[in-house]
Image (cartoon, rainbow, N blue to C red; front, top):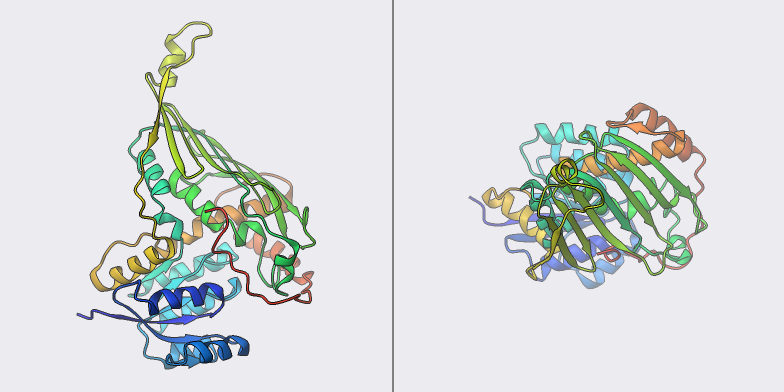
Length: 385
């Protein structure tokens, strides 16, 4: 049995470079950097100056087909995620894909169908699934500590971005280059965690405000209302223009409430189930509860945690923290929010893929690439987390 996974990094922008450095620095036992690729001459020149000992390919296709890597890490613009992942899987490579899985649910379905047939690993870089706060929330919900979920609310407005950020690349914040705005660029992590912890809704009504605070053609401010199959409801609010921003996830159930904010998780456990209390109590009485701060460990490996898990899964069969196929869930939510806003009405989940694609095609046709100002070297590693 092999004890090393040889990986090629495709896309040597900020994310790809950061992952490559982590591997070179030995932060991921069993994972060896074996090749890199990028179509941009500027990135090739930088790599040859700073990391010349590693094989370089001028295209992703060449790296996948001609190198001897076991796996690839794909960190390229969104529209290339699906075709490159499919090519790599069909060429017998393990795949670790940066978020989001795709721009369109229909394309994500196509990739998942290939991944389901493939004998190799497919994972996605949802690094916040390693965060002990969210892992604990998910476990508490699964264990029934809050009972049935009645309401969820996530205000996530700590994704502040300046106009210069959007102007740094001609592809940024365009339908043709990026495929969306805050929902598709900054919020895939939040949308993934929201459904990972609380489950998928079955109905969405959203208001996606295009260029409300910036000179861009995609959304920078969103408010969405969702309904869950068991009767619960939820609200998701995000923006790239709130200062200071808020990151507060609140979940209310029959047996209490939990709040995650400022890197702290609190839970109020009711002494009596609210539904029982409502039926048996009188007048203005209210259920009593006790608040507790849930203590957390310090271990939050994030990107390195996903890289380690990906490697251990290949070498030793460790269960994946973030299976690639699950990337369709957060994308389903963002696609539903877009479609609801475009149609000006609520939409049911799963969405009508064909209808979404028709509307997106119109958006792309009217998209205008802009002249980039400065260097496109800004990454979304930091932000709400």
